[in-house]
Length: 366
Image (tube, rainbow, N blue to C red; front, side, top):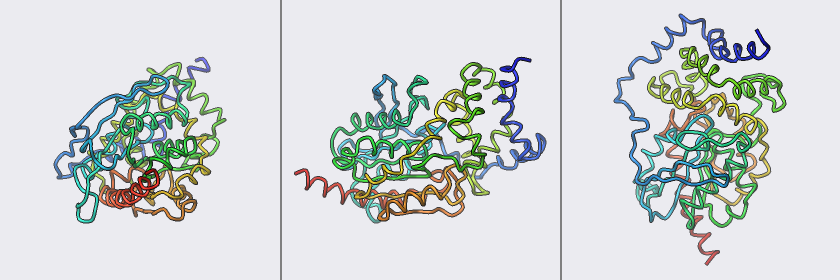
């Protein structure tokens, strides 16, 4: 077998091997999946079934077409834009769309409602593929700026990002600080980081930007995507259990929720996953946090997050002493799905503070 053949073979079974080693073999995996997938007793949550008030496309600077959906009145006093994480899509904000749309964000649900804007990151969901030379964090930040320019060309905006979406938001602040001074009324950072994500539960050597293994995996994905996808599909039980373990922390997380996360990740082509790894692994934007110093900010993270550990959120909060830090006990990386009640309440508080800040922006500009 050629060297590349050995690499492809290894890449195809990596997930299954890791899953078998960590979870006790194929038979044990199947028993665990049956247990965790037992019916929750609740009605199906209807992921990806929520109707949008408006759907349209935004063209990024390099021609990538971004899929955008809106809910809420067009004349709302505040526009809230949500950016999702790596390997996900805008449907990951399912419970925020339910919990925040059409409701006042003041005490007891009173007060004005917001216009909510959700978009799929480039190469994710229903947005079109980006070229391999346009997958830097600055490209994602540029996309966010394009969405702001189209969805909310004037008026105050609140920006909320989960994981990679939060990293793009922070990067945009460093690139265009005046935008935040003039237009942004609040920032929400959910399960994210302002520094490179190297303290994951995987060796530093594996995740290093200069890692030979990472380069080999990326090259294999580019040259043999179909072969790797077949290997990926062949170890579904291991993948499902790892998705559950890395995405969530609660023992009673509904199987349907894991199914949905698993489906989002599985729908992301393997070469897209590897394309964005260097941007994630080389992130260093701690200095950009200073742009948020005078803004209402909420930092939200589960204390059992295995992908962007709580230490990352604490570092952001330490750099922004006026920010609200919300630590969710027993929640994992997908805190906004796992504990939407706590996340939504924190976001309502942010929106209330943002309205006040927006008034001060208007007074200064007037």
